[in-house]
Image (cartoon, rainbow, N blue to C red):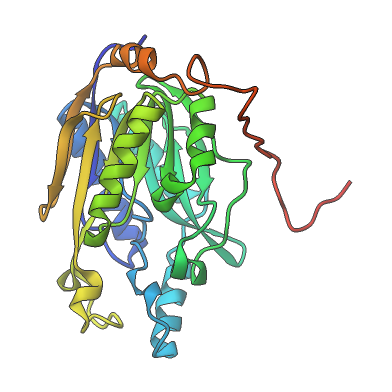
Length: 306
């Protein structure tokens, strides 16, 4: 079992709409967290190049189209130069890094969570299974092939993106993969605070794992000049809510709001033992004769050849 280690949840504003600057900012955050001794560093949902808060608007259509084109132009190839640069930072930090990006693949964008190990290698990437509500005008849907967990010096790491936390089969699938520390990434919407608290603490109980919650702060005054909808500041008012939770649901670092910061906490993998003594959802606290999960992990390309 790994020794106790320091985890970090990055609650910084993105360099909105500027991928190159955003990568530099991500590297800066990784470097800073490493100086504080963090060996697991989690950054928020779609943090590169910034969560598309404008997706709730569809008019004027010209403004939405301009923002969508900007998002495409700043989309991240996975793997590609961005993940290579982040890998160099992870290797320098000797840390496992988990970060949300808007992935560009062909003509489609995906809400993707990338996992990078302390050697700088891209372990894998998970595309959000179901973009939520108006997100479907921006991102395509993933499939069951890339929801996974990875062995790292911090333990077995997996994660979910935003409202995937309310997909009970996805949570149970991660329990079946033996996740020991869960990367939980969300946007910074204030109306989500109660939902995030409920979802992440309950996951720490039912999956008997630690949870690192990464959310962002954002505001209209951080937007580049000329950004459409900048005159609607409420659209961009995001105040964080990142936290770190022990197996069993106790806060190690309580949610922080209205502050651009990095949260730190020590995670002790030995706490997994007591948490699983109470609930091991794929072990002694399961009834496979009554309930079983069918999980299709095959890729679903639109064109399949034999």
